Image (cartoon, rainbow over all chains, first blue to last red; front, side, top):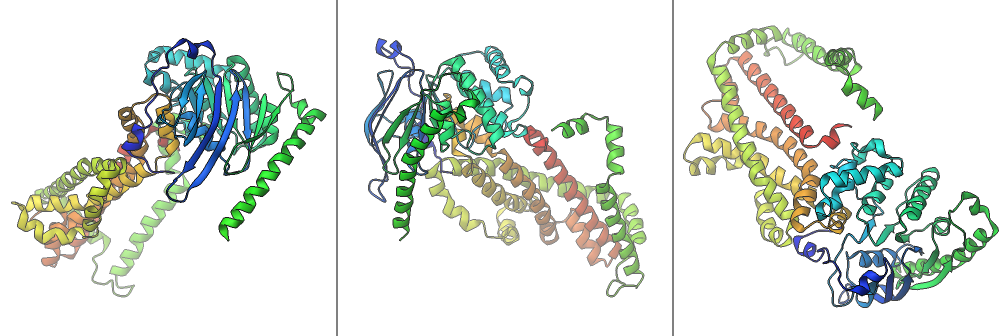
Length: 297
Length: 270
């Protein structure tokens, strides 16, 4: 729960639409090049990211795993435009998205589904979903409502449009939130541990909905999680991030065919991939734990 | 969700009947009845120290007589108006101040120390300076009432703005909202629950304060009515005054609660 003020809000202006042919050629390819992030360089000097590089092709589903407190969410916040970077650069379809010279600028082409949930409690489901297109002025309210209804009914939520978020289960809230993001037709969908606090049943249903939406829209997805099984089951690539300062230490290409089936969870190649990742993540977790011990001492 | 839907969907007569036969109503009524029984027993000398208190029936008779005087209703009107002036002024000044302090760091740095210095001064400590400063007693009392509600509403609004989850603002900005839209469409609605809490606490304080202020500085009002009954040694009148104050406070709180429900349809369901 950080403090807000008008001054730091000014830094969060939506970016102007990118122009030029290079930007239109592809759709949603993210290029993260030697990104570094240091919090409070003059004070406590926390280095969250160092030389962090990764490439995400347009339409690719990438999951990032790593111990708590590694730079996963920091990286996501920089891509989303909520935070700036200290070194390196990020390109979206070849155009600079974040560099050391630009101030952070969020925009509807890369929307976030937040870990803690960010539906507006005072708006109904339909008002929440239509918020983006209406505030941007890209759709009239009537068009937005029609579009929202189509999208909600695709994930089995057409009867709850007049409910308030507080009346919905956590699974339904997450589906609404993903729809609210997708209605903006983003190039990249950023998901920050969206299914973290869910029970197993709700979680597997949510996976199903997310995979269906992914295959229907073909959006680039940047997905942060702690859950290795979830990462393998959903993604095309799983990347392991090191403990602070974070960078990508291992990339695992998931060769499972789509659509993904739950039977795959028991397949030998799935278990082999999981074992591979467990080793890599465990090593980082131990490092993070020991670093924590040192800080305490 | 389903249960709430059926209750609000039922016809009024059925809802009233359900309420009257509900455990909640029966328990509440028993407590009120028990209170009157103990009161009656006390004034009949069956309990220590209570023989000076008139019986409920004597008080009821006095109440009836009061209700037939114009002065009694004038007292209600005067006190209510003072509460209204003070309370509404406190909201009009306090809500923007709290929002401003919560939203703008510089403004908070500027205003917070002075605010915190004034806040601990009890409303009644403002009575002497208020009488000296304001041209009429009426304005003095309304001002003291204002002081009672003002600090509470500011503290609540400030707390509400500071507690807005960061991701709500981030989400809105992501979707393309301008700072102005964020303020009116996100910050303001997100703060409404705190505003309503501040109003609920504030309306209680204004009634406390207005009664005390009337006893010290007023010529009319429910507080003055009670005080005059005391000066005239008219004990049933004192009790009538006290009950009237209790009723006035209760009705005001209900009104504020209704405003709160109307402002927050998303909370009413629960």
